[in-house]
Image (cartoon, rainbow, N blue to C red; front, side, top):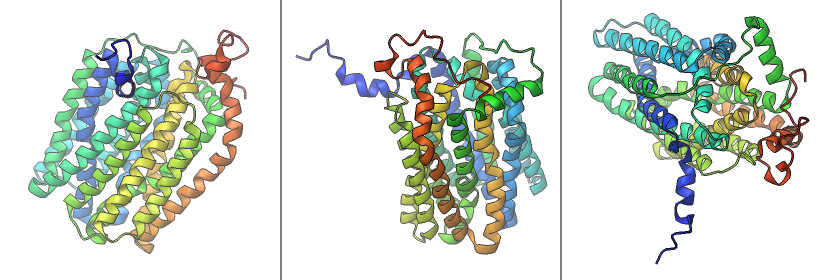
Length: 445
């Protein structure tokens, strides 16, 4: 007879999905899951459309630059808006505008009215939307989780959802493009926004808005900047994310060239490559989801970044589809584990009233540096070829992790008081959680 008093049989599985016990987060998770499949379909179709129309690697770089540069320019202001306004309403607005953008793109492609300048303009528009959407969404997730101990699991599940979509979306896009063209992919993305809008309307939550609304915008920006970059752990993580985004994200922009010209495939080949990366990333996200503590993530960031750099280098040498798919598994795993682990640490140690601004800097580093990487990679690929370009990117990723690895012991000492106050280090947390001396890092640091 089973021992009904022993909860062990469900422990690992339940722990992996524990954030889904919250109704609001569950609704958000389901709506975003559907929408992100459409987003990945559109991203693959857009890259393939531009390359089909132009045969230009440089224009692929321009496309990446146009879609992501608004996050770099507007990210800090979006963070201020997120800290001052109702994040729920911000997300309803951004998802509505995203629906309009995807519908416009679908209509123009299906009626053969699309041109490269129009694609660039619509990509800039989407980049502006994303600048506000990402900052608000990163902060809003925390409002959906009642127990702070489940924040890391929610972030890991978000990454799982993102990468499940990355697995499904490109694979479906490859099949759809080969069968009926890119236009249906854009239409599918437009329809997918209905799911996320429905889930957002069903969510009932009390808004968490900073009380420091009296500060002027630029003073609020300065406060957030001083807080984020005056504290070594936050500063190091943001700079590492910026480096990885600059050197590793161009892989997505160069993917159509590898699929068609290096591996001699078609849109399906590109879908398979993106799908393999998605499988690796999903595996990485589930690996993080089963972890019960933020402790040890610093070392995991280092190992994941090394794996990412090695995967890029190996992929650059491959001429065989099977080997390329294998390499993409490791790059996907390394990328998501590095990014999600960094996000988890930031969300854990940051002050609630500055969360929007800090996460806007995170988004600025993650998405804002990618356009510069795309532009540089596109220009370099025209000169030395896509394979040597990716080889250089992989080497630079390995170089970028070195300063972080050297500073890790010092950063642990700075973060320990925060973990003690939050009870994350239980053996020293008892009796200290209410001590006034143990606060988050002072803003003037």
